[in-house]
Length: 198
Image (cartoon, rainbow, N blue to C red; front, top):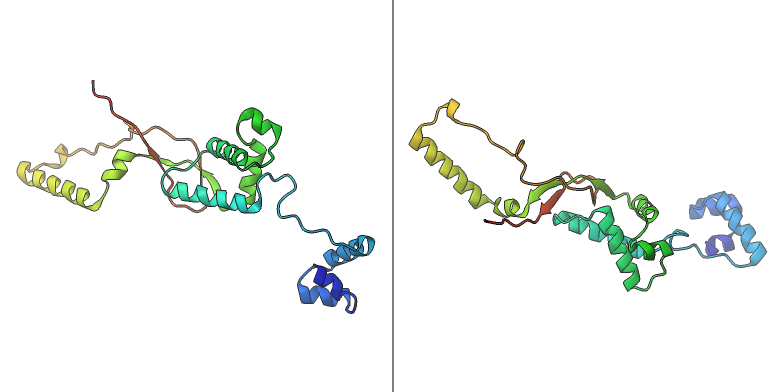
């Protein structure tokens, strides 16, 4: 910007605007400021009310995408708690309501999502860790081999075959909305559970 203002000494406003790609109105406003104070104020690196820097927020957004790809996407509540602890750990000045609630505010979350259109809220498809662990090629081949053996052994008719799925008997409970990358085809939320045998 300083270079563009200095070029205004010998060239017209329109010519400098075309050469630099900066609008004429912006150049004219900075020229007035420059004449009044002889110093152009630096452009801030982040929004006025933004708590984390742009780099820190970009790092956080990248972390959210990575956790989502691993099946451990964060809910908005967990993100706000993570942001609060991150800010406290790094000595970043935070609003008093963050300390009071031990998490970032709802307004921060809303603005964070607006600043990062790459992220969106999605309702994940629940999948148990046990189920995802066994869905691999050798296991599936073995399953279909055993089905074929049973078909040959018992010679089933169409009336003796039933499709039983989890429609009326779900094995995984519904999940809250999580933060995921925009355009992701499928968001999976791995559910960790243990079985108790009595």
